[in-house]
Image (cartoon, rainbow, N blue to C red; front, side):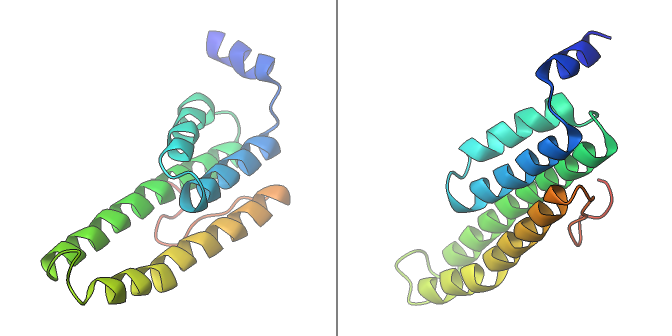
Length: 131
């Protein structure tokens, strides 16, 4: 009961929460990695059950952010296995990652933001309807 009162006092619509979730996902990828993730995690923990629309976008962006972080760790692991950061292969791996993986994550975030603005649910590929 107390949790519902907090949500009602914040006066955030489900559509606005969905837009916030998608925006924080993009900010995490492009501008403030880490900081935006922790803000997104706070929104996820506080508002995941707010509504079907907001919950969908919060679950998807939170999960996609975790996947993006794991992908980044994987790329760093590949760089280290390829000879470290002084290796000739470093830039090939970094450019490939940003051209393929990071760009796809950003494009999916933009599509998710457009869906949130339209008030529609969006499910990231490979993450699915829920996790």
